[in-house]
Image (cartoon, rainbow, N blue to C red; front, side, top):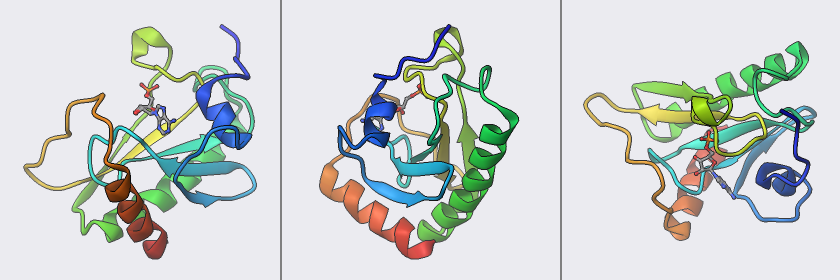
Length: 137
Ligand code: AMP
């Protein structure tokens, strides 16, 4: 299994397709998931190529997890959440659909289930959620 440099997140990193950016540092980039399973659902990716956890370097994994932690605090603050779920899928059999390493960060509230996958966001709502997260950072 190799890295496809034309995958959709590689195109986001190259600025070829738009994303609702929340944060970036030297090694990682964070943006809103366009099919959010919870309000504030965002994605953390490394800026360098990795198909998923299985081929990533320890440095890529460490950089991503440091940013995941930062975003976990930010989304909890922005949405007054009581917890945060982090998801990361590897290969199609493991639930992966986009083959550039990414971590889902989802703020959670007691008793509130995640929404079903595959439902496109209202982009005005997505933008307003992004503004709340950026303000919390
Ligand atoms: P998975 O590979 O199963 O972890 O899921 C890929 C995730 O990427 C899904 O939650 C999609 O909603 C999300 N996604 C796909 N295309 C885009 C995009 N252009 N911008 C933001 N999120 C995306």
